[in-house]
Amino acid sequence: MRIPKFLAASALAVLFGCIHPAPATAGASFSFFYSNLSPYGSWTVSSSYGRVWQPSVYAVGWNPYYDGHWVYADVGWTWVSDYPWGDVCYHYGTWDFDPGMGWVWVPGDVWAPSWVVFRTGPDYIGWAPVSPRFSIGASFGDVDESRFVFVSAGNFLAPSVRSYAVPVRQTRVIFQQTRIINLMYGRSKESAGDRSVSCPSSG
Image 1: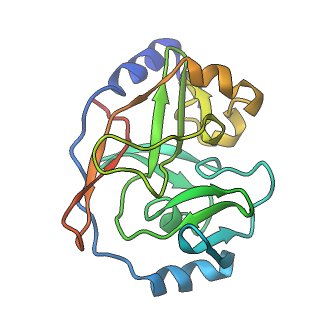
Image 2 (image 1 turned 180 degrees about the horizontal axis):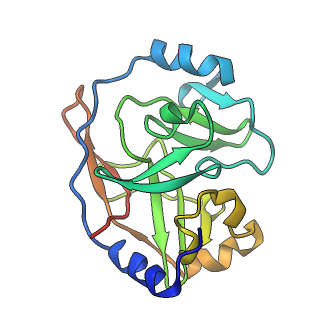
């Protein structure tokens, strides 16, 4: 679904608003992740994060937050995945690109509508997974431009991001024309501490 230009402009404007945080659900256990994800991929050990998971659909050129679409819910912009395992891997934990393995999912027990950094500019909206090492507060660490998926503002609500994603060769230019926007916070039951998550808002 392509958004008319005047609606796209409005969508870009409201991305700069603030939303209230979604309360974290009860902490999910590793056994829950293991049993639910094992049919769809493989578990391995990362020297940086310990146990990590990689989906069987992974191949060169695959990106997280690519096969699916965005919807606005009462908790904010929520990623709806096309994959049967998406309810786990796009709402708990986050993704990182390992030079030796490629994209892997790192477990985490705090729920969020998505775990991404958003960037926006006059014509484009982009997002990339927050690093598993993202800092408390407003820092996400360095998120490489190659990790971002960009679409034109008019295609932000398209039912299939894959169909409208900007070619990777254009990412560098668009990255330089955009900036990170908005933070929301989720609360971990175990630590009772705030963790920052980037998310656009409806205003």
